[in-house]
Length: 506
Ligand code: XMP
Image (tube, rainbow, N blue to C red; front, side, top):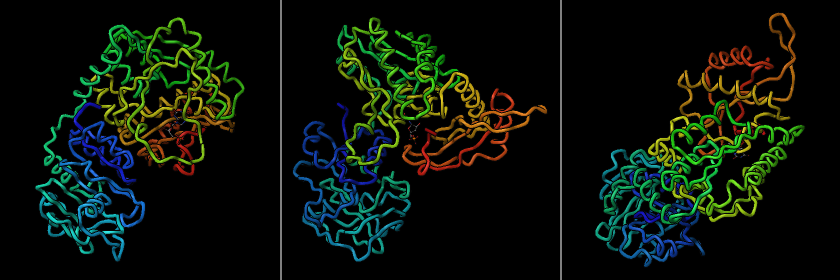
């Protein structure tokens, strides 16, 4: 990104990404780079300031993560935890193994310098080593009962460091510290959604040129909608938007996508209504991964079948976000579910990629979407799986069972909204199970399927917890669903957290 940058050099810290987010919240653009690639990134971005993150290793170990400080020149630097220890070691101070590990809340004493602005002295610590002598030119700017150098600085050289973690919410005045550091860097606080949009419009136009076209697949989700809105604004009709309605979206979602893009944005939108194709391909299929694969394959078929309409594009827009871009440590996690839904794209779709959101976190994408005039329902939309309701219709996917899920889902989510309970929920939905049970309705015996309601809280979908929805609200939803949705005679609420369950039922 060409925007003036504060670079976070990551030493493997648990909270490094959070530092980037906190800096951006202050209106300063920030990126993160693993320490091994710091030299290249500094040369590429020419950052105006640097933060050194925490990390799990000890600077005293052989082969510990390191940094050539000469790369930093005269830039302002803030070291956090491991970053402070590394700064001390590199500049001539002393780091030693602490007698006791400091983990958890601590109170700062003797606050001075940049740390003096922190009104609340409570901080979050997590370290085994500590600085015992500061480098020459530095002064101690905070201590704790067990930590002789909880913060240090050489203000003239604009080198600051803290042993605690200002980026976590457990450090109530952490934001203030980061803000004060940013003041010392002299960087302008001009990282705003509007500036991002202006810069991207220029960049997209420069990349795409005067007459090339961009193929832009919209799914109805936040990322692809914001991406499309940005491209339409940049290049108008040359953003060739494609929307495949597979019949597996929520109640009225497909119509809303078409209305928003065609009527509101005047997009060059190709909407392919392909319910039959997807339902036929899914007929008789019950195995979750097989169902996912089929939906992915059918997407590709749709593109192939409409190739004549879509060929002639030079770029393919993709809704990659910054967390996907950050090189994370290699994952050896077992494959639980396939989340990449579309594979094996036809050759003519192997186009040059354009990824206008690759610098943003999800909350920033939402902000940009709002600024671009997307409706709230779209911008605030919860994550939704690519294979759509097929993973919420446990067992065989039929139009009838999908319709039951859509209707129950609409009731459940409307009630949550009416009661003001939707805020803070990560995902909420209805699903259907492939079992039948007995009920009685109007003196008649019923033998029908149950709906499962699920609502979870989560930070990142890696872990999740069931939301404590008040019993009366659940009871009200159950009554409405059984009365209003044909073919359903029971309603369950899923109480399981992830792990051991997953968010989706399949
Ligand atoms: P699970 O069910 O694995 O879901 O706890 C984690 C997050 O991923 C979403 N999800 C999917 N997204 N294709 C997607 O694009 C998929 O096949 C898929 N399966 C699950 C799920 O909604 C949740 O946000």
